[in-house]
Image 1 (cartoon, rainbow, N blue to C red):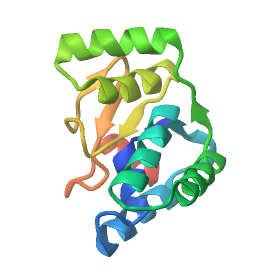
Image 2: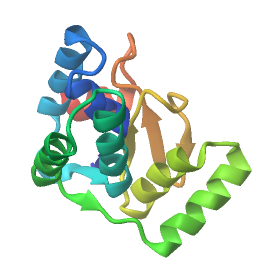
Image 3: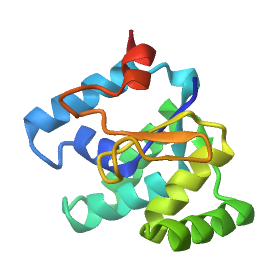
Length: 147
């Protein structure tokens, strides 16, 4: 089963929401199979922005972090068809465009899950189910994947 990871999970793993959340995010990521875990390019762009704007990292340090994540997992490129799907998804479901872009990229790559704390837990679109990996009761698909 393919799984995509949203920006917030990477941000937490980089330590931006405190040590306890960093440990939780890293624990989730460490349980994921690298060959079936994908990162939409959009998430890396957003990560760079958060690391430089909110975390105060230099652009060089932010770039290094982004490159490490990009080396750890296969990337999902953002094509023009993914952008069009994202605009439709945003309009049809009132999602922020950038969230819709990540979800559209995951769908285009045939991911079954999108790990995200930002979107509605359990929301399913085009075969991709959004799952909050920090929920007190793990989603059955995530629990099955991690067992």
